[in-house]
Length: 260
Image 1: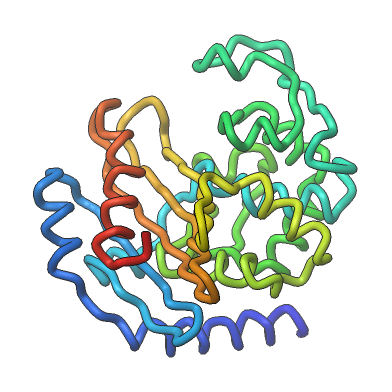
Image 2: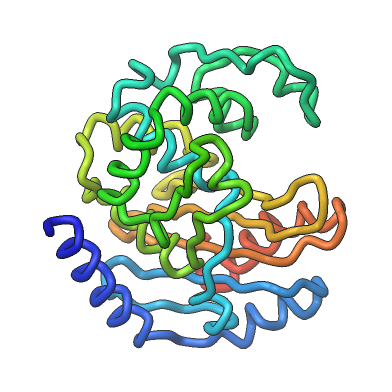
């Protein structure tokens, strides 16, 4: 009953947030010039207003791919599957599509390298029941993990929209998720990408069906002085060369909106 109430409150809040949407012609131009089909969402956490491109797609759920490494880290640490982000996990010894993944490592390094087998091992340690319960508490997309604990974020059935990603990251950035402040701080630390005077950029990429065509993601948030701007973008990837457009378009969109 408690989980249902939390989900209902979150859904109402998300709907209210989505009603404040402002379409950006400038971001539309960036996607058009890049010949990319996708969406970008920026949430002003202070006002609850959304600015972006392609609102219809922004509300559409897709498989999260490696962006799930963020909630996977939160759950793994909360459930005690690992004691810290530096506890080393085995990759399993099998040949991987990316040679750099063929190495045992902790979450700090694994999330930077987007090491799939290491995070699959983390998920197996968490277990199906614990993963399902903890994910429901976090309220991440449709919360559906199916029956296979080490593939649901890669193949489905888990799905989430860009708007939901931004809302989830807003709660993480503000320490408002139902896990300990220590765990949230540890996960924020390992997704910090860049920082300068008065600002910090956090983020994580994802690519559903990599290295084949699929949906690519870049999600994160910007802390700028006393303001917080969670964001999420996704786009169709038709060929490997499209993958770089995720961060390129995301960065260009953040700059176009004056966030960076």
